[in-house]
Length: 185
Image 1 (cartoon, rainbow, N blue to C red):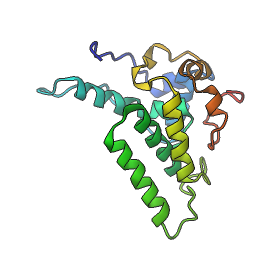
Image 2 (cartoon, rainbow, N blue to C red):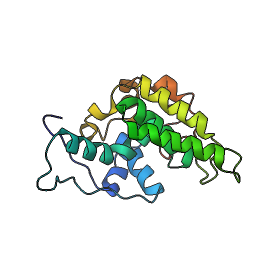
Image 3 (cartoon, rainbow, N blue to C red):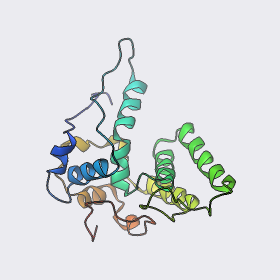
């Protein structure tokens, strides 16, 4: 944080071209498959200084990367799991409020059978199960915000997950594998 570290974020086509199974390759496929584009390089507006501004930008910029590290699709249940992960890792009240909103939606949606039916990836995953899974991931993983992802785009995703201490927990994931993930990772 003191260094205001920000490494190189290649364009999506460059990421997809990285070795199969690498963090960059899987992240590029994930972003492309979800119809997402890379965020522009961060620039703190004039007059905005301090740790909080840097952290907000870093968290926003790495959110989808955290999805990849944790194997979470962009679905209602996947976002609920990401909210659990973020709550446990960052201890922000806002993330906890998002979990509350996820649970309220779960119990109040009269047209739903309490499963995520918005997308085929992650369909059928109960939001409550997703939140519990995300909280557990957040509790077990080494700090995601402290990682220099940009220095390891070519590193296999499984190696990143091993370093973060979440490989065995990912074996219990209620979500299907992301595009490009190794079958045994």
